[in-house]
Length: 392
Image (cartoon, rainbow, N blue to C red; front, top):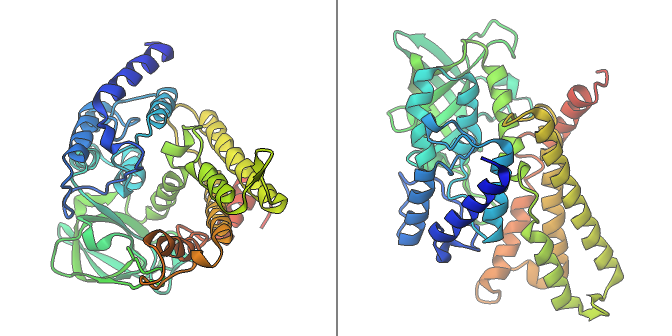
């Protein structure tokens, strides 16, 4: 099928099957095991996309995907953006552990875990950081000891997003205490609903928190849920982070970011216009610079994906995407709050509107983006060594 024909068929299918009420809301769903989705149109949209294989468009059909090429995936994203539709599933399962299992998993692991992820039937969380092992992740101390058909796990993980509603965790554990810190780590899959796993929520200054600390007291992961080889988990774990940082949905799409328009709208509302331009030249230049950097990032992401080969996740270059994107998100909310002045920092519900309080929470939340998923300092080290080839 030609790309032109694929575009026409995709456009027609979306127009017929995407419920109008789900458009323009940028809805993202996290699986359906521990949350209730009451809106019938939302459920219908998920069901139709699952049937089409478009919750994970680039995955092979046998695992619940549609087997689209990168070019076809780009067309799908462009056509969905045209009608303000969004993928109904954008979760750890689809963006992180799923692509990793496609690359490193056994056939049994793929057949057992990937179709439920594609359907949104399970929720996953990530067990990486520990109280004493954040940026220096390879120093982690949570241990797993093989006893019969199971690994017995003891220790804890922290800043575990979504652990309170997750069915499974993909986890890095130490399986050889005597090996060097990078060589004694294994990557495995752990069911959360079992004795020995305790989830403790962490309160955040933003007022909303998805973070938890998870404690393991003789928790068990089956021998068959070891991914790749014993003590080779560091390689698997690093590759998963590249899948996370690549964000195939954004990499294959050149559609404009809604934040571009929202900044301009806010600036016009608060600063006014002169001859069709934002009145304040300083603010206008700051917004233009932000928009130019956003566009440059999107184009760079698209180019790197095309150079990586059809459907392949880029390698160390994903550290560039993570670093620049997190700083741009911080810049966006800083510009937005500056435009709104004192109304952007409300916490008192009797004085400030819900939108104003939400803006405050966004500001606090984005402060952590340059630390989350590997601090930007660590990313710059990766860029220097692995992308630019600079000496230590």
